[in-house]
Length: 61
Image (cartoon, rainbow, N blue to C red; front, side, top):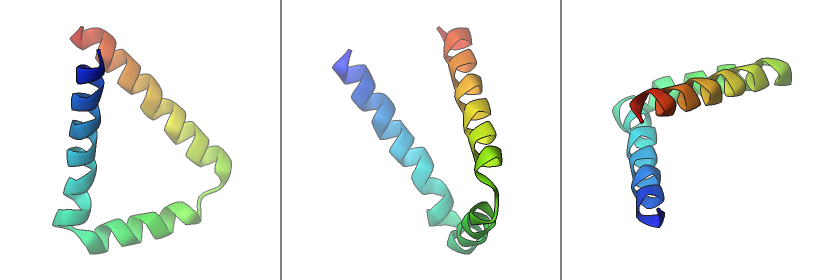
């Protein structure tokens, strides 16, 4: 189980690093736009992201 978690974490780091590597200016603009969003919008976006992730895990497994 720990091996799988570490593999998943490593893949997360690789995927998270693609955007800043390929387009750092685009990432900066997006992060600035995120700072202008209210907390409720960010929470809803986070919730939707988590639900989609759980559903995807369920479908894959």
